[in-house]
Amino acid sequence: MATPESRRPIPAPAGEVGSTWIAAKDDVATLVVAHGAGAGMDHPFLVGFCRAMGEAGVATVRFNFPYVERGRRSPDPERVLRGTWLAAFDAASERAKGRPVLAGGKSLGGRIASMCVADGMPAAGLVFLGYPLHPPGKTDRLRAEHLARIEVPMLFLQGTRDQFARQDLLAEVLDGLGDRATLVPIEGGDHSFRVRGEKADDRSIGAAIAGEVAPFVRHVAGAR
Image 1 (tube, rainbow, N blue to C red):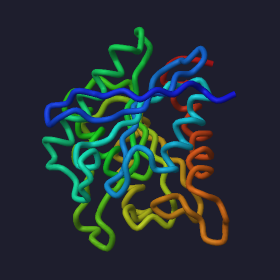
Image 2 (image 1 turned 90 degrees about the horizontal axis):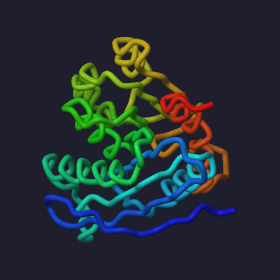
Image 3 (image 1 turned 120 degrees about the vertical axis):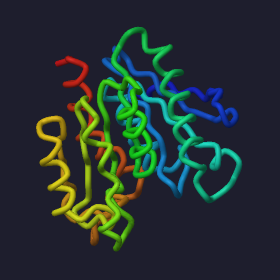
């Protein structure tokens, strides 16, 4: 049975943005999810992921950044992305009824979440659906320094062919984070978790990824 979904506007500093909320029966926590740079909250991957999380007992909130809401391609400045993330997190927290609220997202969305948490956003944990450790081919430009300031549990789901995260560099970063970080490698997966030779659509891929994330969320929430 499909979990209920509702569309709600979220007031944010740079203007109202859309969001989709998925309730879950007997939910143990809420996961707020932000999209990547090239697609909004209704990308099939995120839809499949969030619906599967709902079926696993985790409520979700996914939202758009202002540039997507306004039909632009280029991401907003960092301050706008951060401000929107904080607004979405606050909105989710107000409705969480005291249950834990985690943050995460695909690529850009997850990275901005981590920056907000490093600077005080009180998420109970972080979920990275493909962390963009560096731009493709530019391994000298690591986006990892702020991760050391994060004290909550972090789950990294990463394709082994992801051009945004060379495996040896990611392993080195995660080693420095110690037991706060858990890596789930997706063998053969690219930045979108697509595997060569496998005919799976993005929605199905997102739903499969949720199967790796739900146990982590339940653990963070202290649920069995």
